[in-house]
Image 1: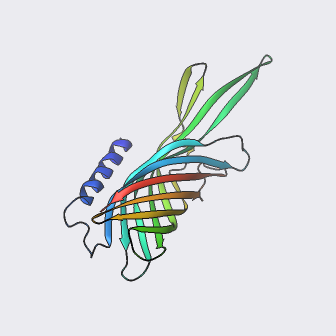
Image 2: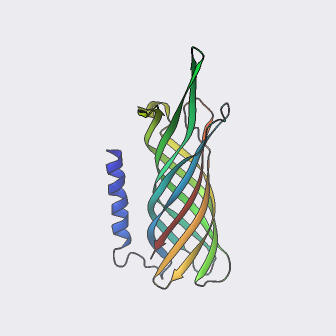
Image 3: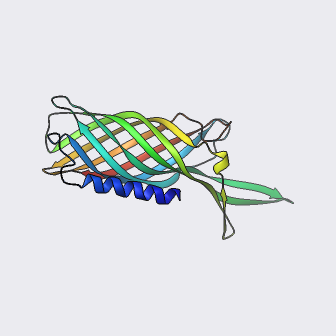
Length: 213
């Protein structure tokens, strides 16, 4: 049900973005779609044998500029896959058995980023983004593979329902008259614990691209 709701919300935002007249205000307001790859991990205080999980992120974007100043605002609504991978080992009667596990944490994420443009306006405009984000858990499960068998366990009861933190990134806009292509590299620094009662923070590198108009 949560995934269906997310799909409806994203579809609605996309339809709104392509509605005639939606991007008025002297071309300073742009709507669009952005997506890419997440390289995610979880930082634990008492465990460091985990590795990154590769997932994706996709969402609807609102980009607002301000007259005469190189500072704008970028926000949106994203589906964002986070989590981590690790190995589980157990020794039974002198024989060590190892299983591969992936912790899948999927969020509905809302960033609110200040966007600082460098250089004069033109067809190529590099920028820096920074600001907070809030995330709401949509799915939480652990998938474990052993000897060709895969077992999935729901861990929603162990995961906090909300995540928040800071995003920093570098990117560039390629202005194409009536539309704009955008690319960014971002780092998300989680400030909230992922698990209740345990020091655990989301860490995500995102490589994203999109278009707006």
